Image 1 (cartoon, rainbow, N blue to C red):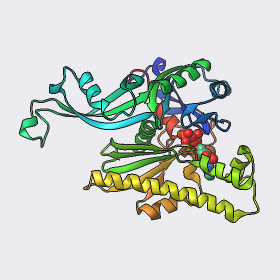
Image 2 (cartoon, protein in one colour):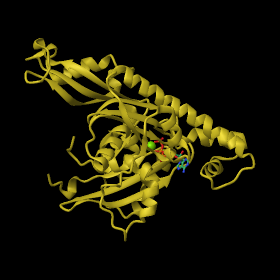
Image 3 (tube, helix red, strand yellow):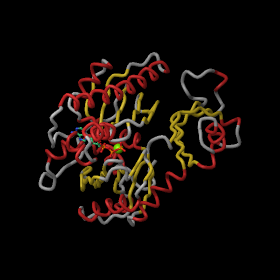
Image 4 (cartoon, rainbow, N blue to C red):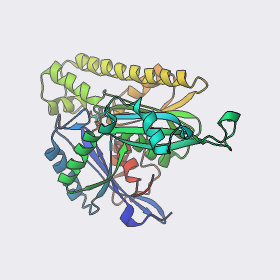
Length: 360
Ligand SMILES: Nc1ncnc2c1ncn2[C@@H]1O[C@H](COP(=O)(O)OP(=O)(O)OP(=O)(O)O)[C@@H](O)[C@H]1O
Ligand SMILES: [Mg+2]
């Protein structure tokens, strides 16, 4: 399929720590990285996915767009966290007038919010029809479908849409962080059979997406991430946010390195416990599965020792996601060392930039 230029979108990942922007050009010769940029946000401009300072966030995005000389106003973006529910459901369409109604009725029991307060979306992942293999006789003829249901609070979506309008941009696609990472991962690694989990450790979000034969079977977002380390440094060393970030990233030394180390290890062990809990849950639901590998991304996966620790605690090999791997990159335009460093932080934005208007 040839995607016309008109349909291409700029991927904008609005993270609580920084905004990442990626533009990809889809050509006959393949996909080319056209733009990549990142800009930091002040402390608490976004809290638990909610935009507290829309003007500041919009102006950060405008600055990035201007600096990168991007003309395309059509963007794709994503949300995550507690305001979003993702669930695999099974619906028998014979019991309801149509698929939409069936899904909505089935969805209601899984959504802890008023159904009128959410935007519902779904994607069919399997149809159990007459031709489905291994189906019980009774099922044949009935139209039973498995679908991934996504419910997001409308006020959360409105917050993002309003903020993008402030930045004079048109949000055309509202995806989820977890699916954007999956999209980027599939583009860079191809279709991997078997089971694996994609883990995004950002500033406030610890996102887990387990995939079996290319289909997401479990997602969970927990509010853990690098921000908690920064905040612990702020209180332990009595320093403001920016200074605490510097200390965390090794740009400023402290006398009490033991205390700093303790902050890192106590946070990391909480995150790894959360990941282990999710893995145990997945394996209890799918007892015959074996999670073959964990793939990590997000800025906090760079914390020295984290990958080794995760590997030893879960006894599952861990790799870093490199969303730039399968893109053509002009070395005259990009510093490859810099891109290599930024790669795990760019996964969501690359996944978003792969989307185009009208795709599904
Ligand atoms: N080398 C590093 N060592 C430790 N922490 C790092 C390093 N590089 C980045 N981080 C941390 O990663 C976090 C930013 O990661 P990322 O950009 O993935 O988060 P985000 O997308 O802005 O936030 P959210 O969790 O809301 O999605 C920050 O907390 C930052 O301090
Ligand atoms: Mg993020």
